Image 1 (cartoon, helix red, strand yellow):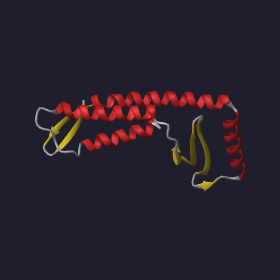
Image 2 (image 1 turned 90 degrees about the vertical axis):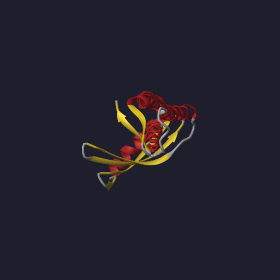
Image 3 (image 1 turned 90 degrees about the horizontal axis):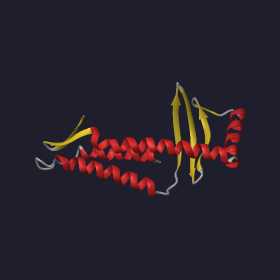
Image 4 (image 1 turned 30 degrees about the vertical axis):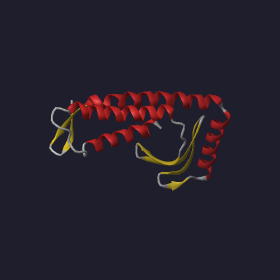
Length: 149
């Protein structure tokens, strides 16, 4: 979820570049706005309890996979529906069903996923916290511009 929020914050910060410029000498206000966006997204993720159902298309090393993912408090349960553009074979469906069964019945599997999700969340949060300082947020003409530092 934090990854989604990171993408949202990045989009919102991009919108900042489309917002009219602040008066000269108020460049710090642009950075403060970006900081505020990041803080709000991190707070929403910490306090948020929303769950999502979504379709995840993923390609690694030229192999594509499409899954249906359901977020539950214990973690994300996924069902693979397509591999390399084709529906799963009966054997692949059985393997996927066994994987889902292990998630539901084995607390160690859920705990491992939880640890991985927490580690990823910390990394994303760390990256988001760097965003306001990663660019020089300044007013220029009719738009805010950001330049890498």
